[in-house]
Amino acid sequence: MTPAESSDQVRGRVLAGLAFVAALVATASVLLDRVTVASGEALGHLGFGFPMTWLVQDQSALSPPYPTDLSPASPWENPTSVAIGPLVVDALVAYVLLVGGWLISHPVLRHLRTSHGSH
Image (cartoon, rainbow, N blue to C red; front, side, top):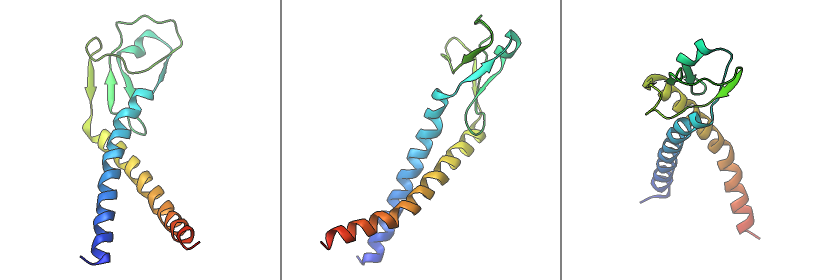
């Protein structure tokens, strides 16, 4: 195996790992999302997800004081729908940001590693 082939394999593994992390970030980030609700009518259609809304819940069974901030609640007690398209877009946005960060940091880390090794 040539060094170029080895480098391509490492790059492929890094990109695949970043895709996995991006999918985790997109799905887990919804747990941190909050929406402000000013009235009871808004409780029937709460959208979560960033940058696109992909999780929608009907929390109209709740009766919080208004205005209030709500986050995703149990899907067993609150009718929930998931839109796959926007979820994929959110994961792609996370992937682009992760790959961009890797592309920026990779040469810097490689330079630090080689300069540290030469001392």
